[in-house]
Length: 83
Image 1 (cartoon, rainbow, N blue to C red):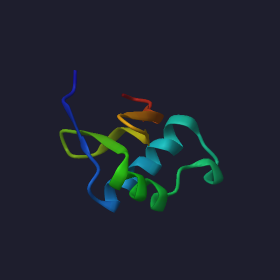
Image 2 (cartoon, one colour; image 1 turned 45 degrees about the vertical axis):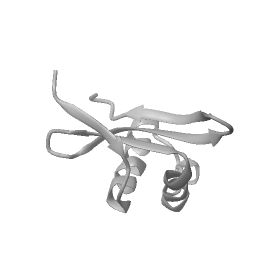
Image 3 (cartoon, rainbow, N blue to C red; image 1 turned 90 degrees about the vertical axis):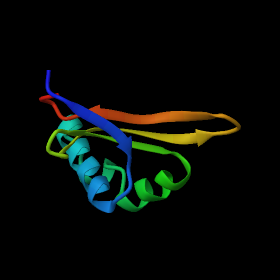
Image 4 (cartoon, rainbow, N blue to C red; image 1 turned 135 degrees about the vertical axis):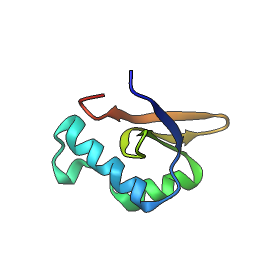
């Protein structure tokens, strides 16, 4: 199996990678893809994790919104079809 790592999102480039994963994983129309500005905002108070391959290419993600006091609502999770 190929190696990968999972980490919190820290850059807009990573968020753009997540947008592309949404397109490929679900063939989503543009209006249904979570916007980059929303994902960036949620990354500051929720959970946005990205999975990357050995070459640091985005291959998957999880996007969760806070549901207080100590929980998160997992809104989306996907990988590229080849993963």
